[in-house]
Structure formats: structure tokens, C-alpha cells
Length: 376
Image (cartoon, rainbow, N blue to C red):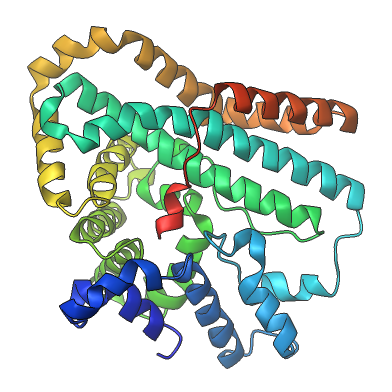
């Protein structure tokens, strides 16, 4: 309890009504950057010690380095102690391959963030800032664009963090595995923010019984895990709604078992999964505002106006073409093959590509902006 007490008080004190109004002005200044991430790592270390999962008891310096390892300190990946602490004594000896791979990951993360995600923000931010002053077509475009933006922004940060760690000879776990190519919600959560999903499974879902104690316990475990996972992102009911909706969809999926249905059903279910994932980003994105409920209602109301939405789609033709190209080239399996092909380039070619990308970012990036997950 002592581990999570600062997180609960500083991040959720106002939300739960346990922090007096006279002290609430301190919250923006007193909330440490990345507190949600290293709190979970601290919890993981204590749990690993209690469960006897560490072969040796590390010294204070190793534990401190595990908690404060700077590449992933602010926004993950969330690393198990058994994954990271042993590496401090046994760095990867293949230095050239690690340096090349790390540089490639940093460059690819920079492309995702500065060239793609930040430019998509120009389509998203005006709509969420003024949802009543835009048409249905603009709302639909913003909803789809934000789904790509948050993926590119967060996976870009993860690539940069993993890449910097590899420059030091440290391997951090993969955090994203093309989540929008998932065939169902369970597959999506095995691909999206993998280290958080794994942490929630190991420390909440399984201890509550998981799927081993009947359907009712399974539904309760899923619901509580996803509700808390949503609340982890921020002290706002929009995040609770987002997490709870995903928990409900996961529970229903366990009942209908789409993997055992016909091929047509599985294909339709895949589109349903992707559509619901993108739609549920609406309350998530609106949660960044104090009046998130009202903004979410306005946006969803605009989406219900199907006639106006279809009528305004041609006005956004260029943007939709770019969105389709982005989805095909970056998020599909073909995009993954392209990245694997690039990483096999010789070192001089990788270096030349890195310089080219940096110059392109300096010329084409819309400006500086923080990573989305820095606020969590």
C-alpha cells in the first residue's frame, strides 16, 4: 500500500474527493512525471520478491537503477525485474548489432512521432476543441485519425525508448505488435501496450481468479481489471468508461468465441473489433478535457447524423486517401515486412537514412509537442 499511496493521493485525490479544495492547486506541480509507470515497476519488484521470482537478491543500486532507468522511466515500457536487473551485470556483447538496431528504432520512432502523429494532430485537435462547430465528416475523420495518432505517438515513444536502451546494451521488451491487425479484442490487448496488459494480467486478473473459477468470476475479474486499467490513465470518468467498455467487450467475446465461428463471421468480427476500438478512443481523447462527458456526447451525436456524414466525405477526400495509405503501409503486415527489410541494410546505409530522416523531420514536422502518454 505504501508503494501506491503517493500515486493514489496525488493523481486521484481530487477524483475520489479525499483532497481538500484548498490543496488542489498543488496537484499540477506536485504530480511527478511518469509516476504511474514507475509505481507499477515498484509494485512488480515487491511482488517478484514475495513470490520468490528473483534468483538473487539485488543490491540497493541495482534496484534503484531498475526503477530509474531513464529510457523507459517516463512512459514505459513497464519492465519486470527479472527482465531488466540481470542485464545490468551481463550487457549484450554484440555491440555493433545493438547499436545499429537501436539507431534504427530511434529513427523509426522519430518518424512515427514527428512526421506522422504530430501532423495527424492537426486534423484531430480542432475537432475535439470545438465539437459543436464542425460537421459530421470532420468528426469521423478526427475519430479515425486519432486512432492512428495515438498508436503512432505511443509506439513511436516506445521505439525510441527501446532504441536508446539498446545503445547501452540493454534489451527492453516489445510494447506494440501491430495492434490494429488484431482479429478480436483479446488479440488487440495482446498487441497494444503489451507491458501494461501483461502487468494487469499478472497482478490483477490472475490473482482475482482469472478464467479458472467459473464464468462469473471471469467476468468480474475482466471487468475490475479493465476498469482499473482505464482509471490508471487518468482521474476522469471517461477513462473509466473506456476501460469498462473494453472489459465488457472482452467478457462477451469469451462467450461468443468468434474463433470457433465461420470464416465470414470471423472476418466481420475483425471489422467490428477495429471499429469499436476506434470508436472507444472518443471518450479516451475527450477525457483530456474537464468537460469530457459533454464533448464526448457532442462528438458521438455528430457521428449519428449518417446523412450529413456521407454528404461531407468528398470534402475530405485527400485526407481519407492519406489515411488509407497510412493504414496499409504502417499498420499492416506488409508494413512490418518493410521495416524488417530496412533493418537488414548495411550500417552506412542505415546511418544515411537516419541523417535523411532527421533533416526531413526538421523541414516537415509541424512543431514541438509532447508525447500523449507523458500525461499518464
